Length: 100
Image (cartoon, rainbow, N blue to C red; front, top):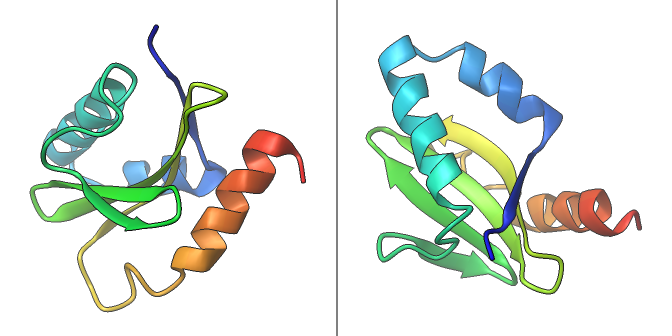
């Protein structure tokens, strides 16, 4: 059964800032996470957080297996700040999915 894909509200803003070619590739990769939340190219960061690389961009997302949900926390170019708030991403994802 495929997972549902949910995006943090900031992800839409991040997508709008990209070129159309990059946006298409990132969106296609996010959609593919519904069928395969842990593709071979993903990297486990901490807790239920993962990241997958799409060109110069990183998609940081959380997987909730019991709810069958993939929650995309952030899409950004790789910089020092990209991974700075991992615990905040995990907390944000948990609140969005569980309402806590």
